[in-house]
Length: 142
Image (cartoon, rainbow, N blue to C red; front, side, top):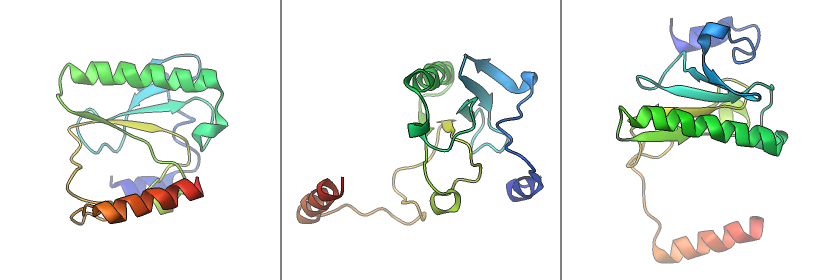
């Protein structure tokens, strides 16, 4: 089944309804599982048991629990793969490419990023002047 078809069939959050046999490892607040629609082989997900959208909605204990399983997943995948990436996007679903409204982290072996931007176009490097200007703008906003 294609991912878009899977999403259309969903009635509830798929991360809130994981079965025991779908869980690789868990702790009090967090679950490690295999992605049902993986970007690559052995693509893992780390997600809080509590249904939240943003990292700021979690307690320090819950954030620590996520970190524990992120490191566990990384350690296990590093036994087989040289390169493993963690991907986390926060925000409104379609605007950032999220399709499931439940906070989650991707642990992805051999993810191909680097020379392409978010629109799969060749990335450009800021000139020194542009770079300093953008940093100044960002400091004002933050």
